[in-house]
Length: 256
Ligand SMILES: C[S@@+](CC[C@H](N)C(=O)[O-])C[C@H]1O[C@@H](n2cnc3c(N)ncnc32)[C@H](O)[C@@H]1O
Image (tube, rainbow, N blue to C red; front, side):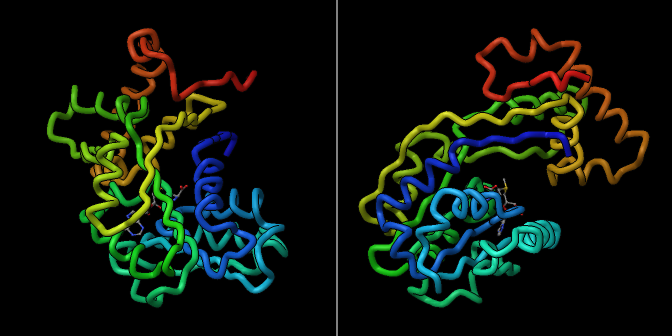
């Protein structure tokens, strides 16, 4: 796909993890709720050369499609990815991951979207070694979620993803981590950016990939195109209405 997605939080997560426990001494790394393993990709880019030779990285996700996408990235990744394995696991129940087996657990934009984020945190704590680094990210706000809320204008009962309020502030996230038993907790606000080359790519992300929207699409093709065209209307024709605030989600012209 032509979309270029750059969420700079990934680099900052790596920096934070490395400050707590340097990757040069990593003894086991879990990328929990890995999606297509983009965090692992960033880890290998930023610290791959420093990792001890025998340190393994486990990418885990509960969705078959994501496990497949992560596996595809591994298969195409070459030698650097030989240390990576991909497994199907629920972040709330990491039953294939042993107690105190990881020096690092990375979880990008995952825990807040599960039914029990505290369970994800207690599992993280269980699999981490003493002094290990757990790094998680969440959204304070973002414009693509605001954009999705527009669906409610013509489908008021549509279930849509949202971030629990405690996960939208640094104090809230710190509180959640402390509640789970983490020590030396630090939460920082960072700027995130997702850039899309083409408006169609954003529409595809919102309409084809987001689980709630996929569910609603299964009601039929006519409805699906209605949702799609509404999105296009709101995002393109009503652009000035949609983006009065400084745009965190940016559109770049693809030149086509
Ligand atoms: C927003 S994506 C983030 C993917 C990746 N961590 C990243 O930073 O690019 C959220 C991912 O969490 C996964 N996920 C959601 N709930 C989960 C759960 N309970 N257990 C494991 N994975 C989960 C989804 O399948 C999806 O791949």
